[in-house]
Image (cartoon, rainbow, N blue to C red; front, side, top):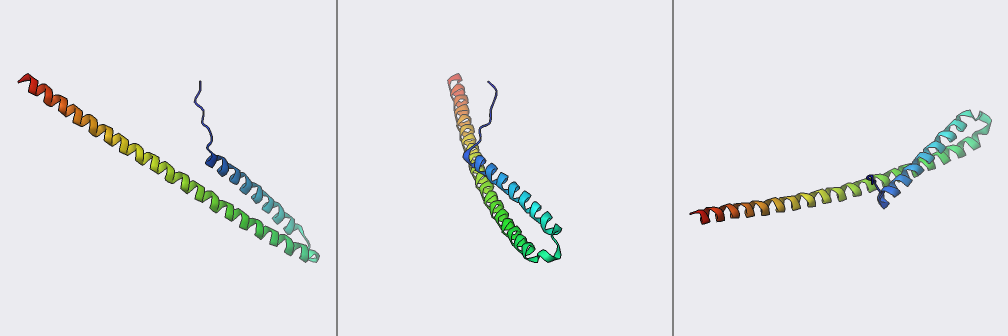
Length: 112
């Protein structure tokens, strides 16, 4: 059976936010294109579209901040797991070292 990687809920949430950010960025680009095509006699519509663009950019920035916070939280969890693994590895190494030296001492004592 091949190895498979399953997405954690955190990964799923980060992916959904990333998709939303990309969709909002696409919408902003479309609106900016439309604003640049508007004539001088449509200043009210231009102002409204610029307001919408600013609102979308604020939403994008908020989502990016949430995404960064999620990534930092995930990174700290990974750091804790790696730190725990290092502690367990050190304890196992210490135990085998103590047992190994005890066995050597026992063999030397029996040999005399």
